[in-house]
Image (cartoon, rainbow over the protein chains, first blue to last red):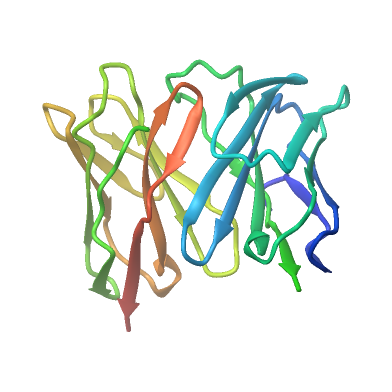
Length: 117
Length: 108
């Protein structure tokens, strides 16, 4: 158990809908990272937050947004869903702060599996 | 994006050492090299990381080339539980970029 909690574990929805994925980082971790893992593209970095502020952005679509709340949990919002958004969405946390030098390790949750029909 | 290159798959026999290579020719001077692995149906888990010197921990060893353009993850005695996808990662401006990884198959 990594200490990172993601909910829901599974979610099935229809195209055009909107969903929210939630992540609770390990106790004491200030950084949260979101990744998307689909069958044909491996793990894609989406976005990172540190202590409530966005710190790094990857290949995140405009239909997707995220935020980190004062209690440090984070939510990833996916809207106008398309079939291609079906994937595993992972949240990871680290103690931080992000130094750009990668000295800290990431702790991953078990992921939220999204299926868009 | 900082890039890494790994073989798509490797095979090992149980209880034998495994050497997983990674090329990262675009590495910059202060980038750390991280290795993670992803067991089936689980999220990735940290294995080891290093900067210049070789590193050892309870899970594995990391050998880093002198020019830092490549590294090798060493599992000293592979077990069936080590069957996973192993990712070599460079950190670029706070972003942990995962490549496609090496799928390790361990034969009993």
